[in-house]
Length: 177
Image (cartoon, rainbow, N blue to C red; front, side, top):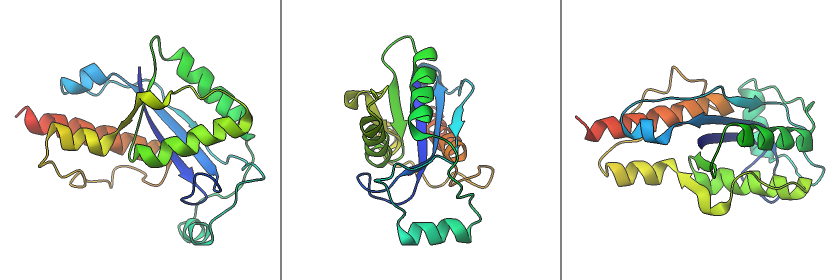
């Protein structure tokens, strides 16, 4: 099973900043390549409590405050990561595939948090896919940013996951016309 993953963070550095929200949406990649978006119930956890080693970037904190984001940290990080791993295992019969935009941002955060919690990450680094690379490969002239993002609650894990899935679907449909 493939999973579109998105995180919200306390900054841009996967070594020193933390994850505040995790979202994963399982989807059928084969169906997507045929022009259908088939998903399962998403996994979303917000208000994650940072590890003590993780800090807020000042600019990110100010941006989140300015845009009215809930900054409370009430959910235990190791428990949330364990729940996500269980969710991935329950929704995948084969090797799960991690998709993100950009994957080189999201995956290092996720993997480093699993390592810090002493847990095994449910995705292996060889099974990481990037939405931008996918779209560029499928249709080099496709404008990934042309999709109207207003129906999606962007800068939230679930909203960004759904926008990225719709972007991939639009890209596939752009070549099947």
